Length: 273
Image 1 (cartoon, one colour):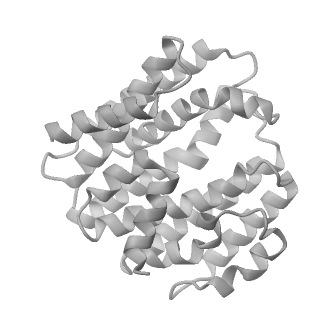
Image 2 (spheres, helix red, strand yellow; image 1 turned 30 degrees about the vertical axis):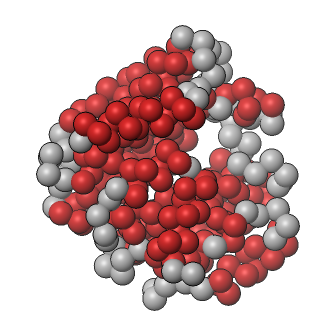
């Protein structure tokens, strides 16, 4: 199967929300962003897996990081065989095909993506080791940087690589943190049932919503600064719009946006652009 079609098909299965803005990106940039997203999804599936012990998660994530640090010409399934061997029955397709997603990026930007995934995987291992214990807002900042703000920085590098688009990197951090904090709010109940909470000690939904709004102010500035001629604007505008709509829905008592609401909002944005 053509790798481009295979990557987009799996992307559509794992996240319709991201599939739409990624599928609208031009050739070259589309492969770079899809590669980064699928790689992040691959390691995220390990971090969030309900049936793996934290020690196993940490070991696998650190091993993945080391494999990536040793790569120079791309990767094959053999590179990850020993990493995945003992847990094959538990791992999903997106994780088992990590070598393909790493090799999917254009060669002149691939090392930047590998570095980002390696670093994120190592940081995820730290949080698995401590069972994602977050006591303070500073620790929340640390966690959201580990898994999301660093993604904002990577995206900024991808925009710059593709067409020279320059962005404010502190606003890029806020863009990532804002999206992640909305995810934390949306998944709070589900996380709690598996013994994990990303809320600082004593925080309620009100405090987390306030945190999200502060970060999304930076995200607004980030997206507002993107030039109209850059495909980054279309991509970021869709994702930010969904984050705002999700936060608003939860503030009014809903658990999250319905799939039909998501699709309707996306259609509104894509028709207007």
